[in-house]
Length: 418
Image (cartoon, rainbow, N blue to C red; front, top):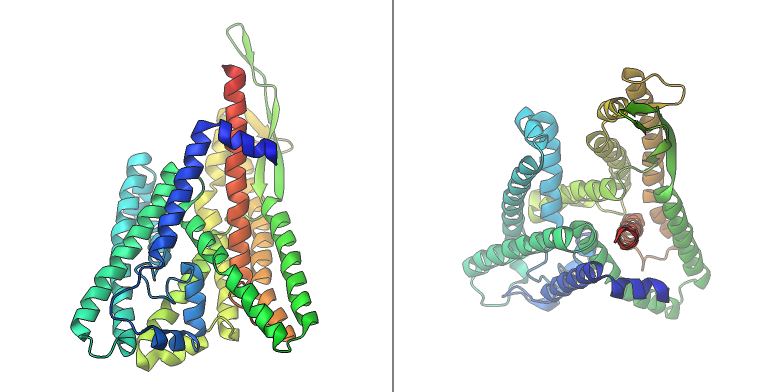
């Protein structure tokens, strides 16, 4: 551990990235404590005490929603905009072509995503302000409250989006995932305090131990599946160019069982939270918000199905077996026992489809386990820290460690070459 820490300090580029990322996280957490003007705190706390959807939404903002700060919507509008843009790339040929134009195309799509984020944030902020008019301070003007809240929340959500992009570009790790990770981890001390209170109030200590054991087993399972790979061996034939011999070596293609990582979980959660959140703002639709409560059976069923969908969807847009097969053929390679070209593409597609099925089943099953364990033990203090939170926390932590290791290995090779 000391060697790893000294490695961080000795590598200037990695040290700067880590310090930059920590700086963005500090700004994100500071913004979570800057309240929107005109809110009666006591009424707001009472409102959150009776809303499962609100408490679940608050998990992704690290308590910013419960405090109704300028970062109350967190990174959720940006994630929703990213989902919509990725879906549109499948159905709109112009966007699909734009995505294939390299860096310029990706920048244009990123710009469209930002514009859509601002629009979604403004719409959601208007709904929240209209819905929360009952928790205004007495005598506060509603028009002023509505305008101020929409401006503050939209600006805050845009600022969080900017933080996430800065972390991705200049820091270390995926910015959006890391901010969600920070929001979830920041709530753990409160969960521990609630559990201690339950035990003092007569809750079963055995039930708490069973719940903790279930969490530990899930963490181990998540790590094993996230790190598991199916390695497909590729042999490159020898080629003589001039007086030099190229190729002749053997390598492998690492196919992960869970190709999408935590992205399907984040996407599925965001898609389910969006209609439930909108329903909370409209009195006629508040019954739907109850149906989509995170503890309800309908929510779990839809969550299960959406995880399946987004696991396959994300794998389909990030893994192209035809392109990979062409690249292998182009450089004189072949998979042992498989002919180059179309048979290779079919073999890769068949393999990734089976792997994705295993990954999707694992994610979907692990998603509903905490709810089942909580219903059996009747310990609800860790209700916010469910499968979604565990998958995101473990997945982001593994990705962060992987990126740091890549920097360390790259630095070692640079030292050898120098």
